[in-house]
Length: 265
Ligand code: ATR
Image (cartoon, rainbow, N blue to C red; front, top):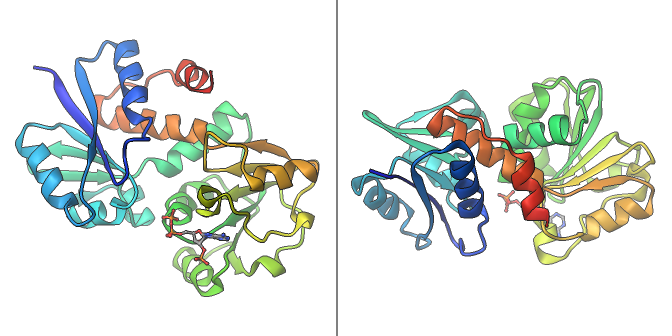
């Protein structure tokens, strides 16, 4: 019988995950189906339970259900625990395993696809919400020289920095005015066509400006380009986090390059 997988979100119609996982399944010869399921705002747990009862083998979870999935999972991987959120669930005999592949997806896109090693780099992370939190530990695992979090609400940045300790520093946008090697936009500003109030002094010709959003040349990328930085969007991260989830479910690593190329085309 074909194994069933799904992505749960609200909204979810825009999700590229069904396309990506269908491509991975074809490429690796896996007998699986993958659909998008729109769960009501207050109905994620029930929708997931129905999917499990119908024999679903695994799921991806997207906005706004990642924190709820973290609570629902019977067991968490270390990276899901540290992220405080779950984007990948695997149905097991004794319950749901909750994992988080977002940070691994970002790191794979940076280090592998963009050939940008992170050790010794000065990183500025914009935002202190779920998206930022989800990538902190995998970034720190790469041994950057510094990880600075800037956020509109400084208390939130401070709380996130405190949770990770070590070389993480929190600041207001006005305090971040030195150039960085890598600047990652993990705010939701781009979704609204807005620009986080970052100083142009943060960019230099050596800077890689990475927006986690994909499919658009965002105001953040415009500003970065204007000030000499190289830019990247989050499409590679999207495909890499999917590949990592595919590996969690099927034990096979698909080749991401042709899927990224097809989505760009
Ligand atoms: P997500 O789970 O996508 O991270 P979130 O938890 O709501 O969503 O967090 C959104 C992040 O984007 C926050 O860091 C938010 O800043 P505040 O904590 O100060 O609210 C940031 N954000 C959203 N719109 C922004 C904007 N126009 N400029 C700067 N930061 C913005």
